[in-house]
Length: 137
Image (cartoon, rainbow, N blue to C red):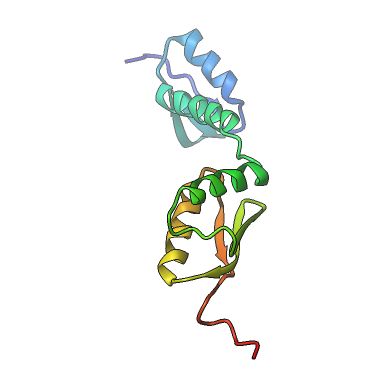
């Protein structure tokens, strides 16, 4: 246990807190606002922050065209996908299906296929079942 307690003000940069930990050979630093204790930063907190920062920098969301290509590739391998009757568009990470389908099961399957593609933020299916299309006669 450390005899002399070192603390940091709440507005201090994380880098300064890490430097204090290293200099004083401590594993935790109390965080104060004036005379009030408002938290404690531990080495584990620092490691989590570094990992989160690295993860957010390396996992950039793919663009709309890349998402559309991945969804289309997934759909083309499915026996129930009818490319001549349906299309896929992506805007701001949201997949939009247009056209016709045979069954509601195809709608559900297409939703699952899109939701499994990284970067997809939502799915909107605007297709009609073949039996819901009004007759032109």
